Image (tube, rainbow, N blue to C red; front, top):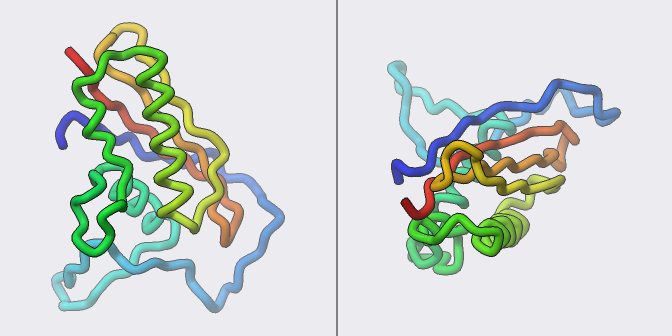
Length: 148
């Protein structure tokens, strides 16, 4: 899905007042498990694991996963839609519903879907969330190309 470009970045690091156990690293199971040059499996930190999961949820069309036929947001279904307020609202609602259902490790703060002023066929999507375990704020941004 080359029409979706991701710009992943974190919000400024700030204190959350929450503490974590130093003896338990915040890791997640990798979505694609491949051994490194030494034959060892590397586990992503929690932030990267959640970010990978969000990417998978947004890129997956419902029906693609055999054992979870309802999994995914199906953003690709919007590729030939006009860039209207109605379409942007539907995209926002789809993202909210999919992330609330499939990514329980986050608390969604906001999902913004805005048109790009100089590129009428593209929209900018920004998802702000906090990790439930640490309260750390995170943000994911992507650009989606709609009707040309």
